Each structure stands twice: as C-alpha cells, then as structure tokens.
Amino acid sequence: MARALADKVWQVDVVDQAPSPAAGASAVPVGVLSCHVSVDDNPLSQLTRAGVQKVMAFAQQHLVKGQDWLDCGVLERRLEGHTKKKTWQPSLIGSVWHGWVQTPTQGQLSQAGLSEVNAHEQLWQPHGAWIKPKTLVNALMDHRGIRFQGGQTLRAMDIPALGYDAVVLALGAHTSDFLADLPHAPELPLIPVAGQVSWGYHATGTATAFPPFAVNGFGGFVSGVPTPQGLAWYSGATFHRGELKAEVTPQDHADNLAKLQQLLPRAAQELKAQWQTPDQLQGWSGVRCTSVNRMPVCRALDPAKLPSWYVLTALGSRGLTLAMVCAERLALEIDLRSH
Image 1 (tube, rainbow, N blue to C red):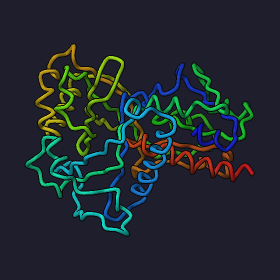
Image 2 (cartoon, rainbow, N blue to C red; image 1 turned 45 degrees about the horizontal axis):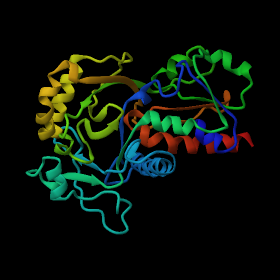
Image 3 (tube, rainbow, N blue to C red; image 1 turned 60 degrees about the vertical axis):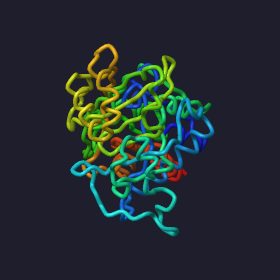
Image 4 (cartoon, one colour; image 1 turned 45 degrees about the vertical axis):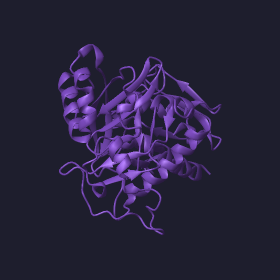
C-alpha cells in the first residue's frame, strides 16, 4: 500500500508497532504465488490472475531470481474432500485461462512422485512461483517517498490530530480491535486464522528427490529454497479459524505431516525421519486475516462519516498474490478522491 501511494508521488509514513517491516504474517519464510482457478472466472480468480502478473513483474525488476523468488510453476492437486473438484478442460485459445492453466504432463507428475495419479484431475499453473515475503516487503519499502516508523503505538482516536490527508489501515486481524474506540467506525466482517508452517534443511544431495516446483491443494510444499544455511523445504500450513494466538506446536507439526502424506506421499516418506527428529524440524506460526465471503476488504472505511480513512485487509492465505493489485486499486481511489 505504501509503495502504491509513493509511486503516485505521495509522501507516506508507515507506522508499525514492530521495530522493522514484515514482522507479522509477512514474516513467513516462503510463500506461493498462484491463481484461484474457477470455471466461471469469478472475481477472486480475476483478482489473483492480475495479482500474479503484478508481483511477477515487480520481482523480475527488483528481486534476485533463484534466491528471492523463482517462477518454477505450481502443481495444484485437486484432492477429493479437500479441494472443490469441478470439471476442468484444457483452456482453449480465447479462454481467459489459456496459457494460465494446463493439464500437467506425466513427467511433471513423476517429478512429484505421482506417476499413478490421473493428470486430468490436477492443474498445472506455469506462471506460479515461490517467493520470500520479507524480501519482497523490503524491496517495496525501498522508495524515497516512504518513511518507516517502527516501535510506535497509536490509537485510532489519536490519528486525526496528526494531520494526514489519508489514513490506510492495514492491520490484518487486529483491524477491528483498533477501530473499537473510533466513533462512527463500521464493523468489519473479519476472521483471524492462525497457522503454522513446518520446515527444515535438505540433507546433502537429497534436494533432487523433491519436485522442482511448488505444490498446493491440501496445504502446500516448496523445496530447494536457498537460505544462508543451505537449501530448505517448507510444508503447511495449518488453519485455526478464530484464533489470534500464533505459536509453534507439536500438534501442528503432526497435522502438516498428515497433510503432506496426502499431498505428496513420496516427499512425506523422504522427510518422515527428519520430521520426527525435533532438532531437525523448524516451525513458524502467524495469523492471517480473512473475511466472511473470503474476498479482500479494500475500500473507503465510511466515505460519509470518516472521509480520508481506508482499509486494506482480509487477504487470507493469498496475501502475496493479492496485496499489490489491491493496493494499486485503492491508491488510485485515494488519489482521485484527494483531487
């Protein structure tokens, strides 16, 4: 949001309780860029397709490919009982999905250890990618029009006295609590969702045993990600709706393993011993924010009663895909209103 406004020549203050950017859910070590695929090309599908394009273009220009991100493609498994299975035909020329969604090849399924799986029940997204959120956030913040103010605690009622021309709340699941003491603030249909990612380092020479692309559909899996300590793999995440407390627990590790055993049985078998060795298994937890209808909340807060106040939140598990495109649209609205 800060970058979208700064690119329109606004001077932006980012005020954060944390001492540095990306300390909340954006601190997850790696995430996946992919489209929400729907036969009817619903609004979320349209947003995610635009979002993938936006983030990939920024990554190409500002991040290091293979280190900060990789356009490796995403295999989406449509598992019975976990993913809505709808009849899918290869997207024809003229379809909005042409070039975006394909049937995976037997070679790709073999790389994932899924040789016996029916290819037509899976989707291949050639434009999918993994990306490191913290690196992306730091690159977005690297703009002369943005000033970061960390270690700050503000109340909603204090903000009007600061004289800002526009205020954007991007507080995730804490948005409603923040607005509780602001007169005329509307109630927002927000739901916190805590979750945990399990991860570890590849044993020497084993990274090639895992798919060279990201996989999702029932949890997700990304492997071969470079870190200063070596190549790493990431699996998850869990979902605890209504939970605001983020903590790493053995139960969530077990749940992530159970998901991986269904998503990628071969990868789960390769990692089982490591998963059961506490000093080799890492964890990260955070809190996402979603809405009742699972669409982002990206709009003026209340144009009549709270002019110049806006909100961007409820990006759910697709924050990496949706944030930049939603911010760009909201920045355009703010810019038009201000003139």
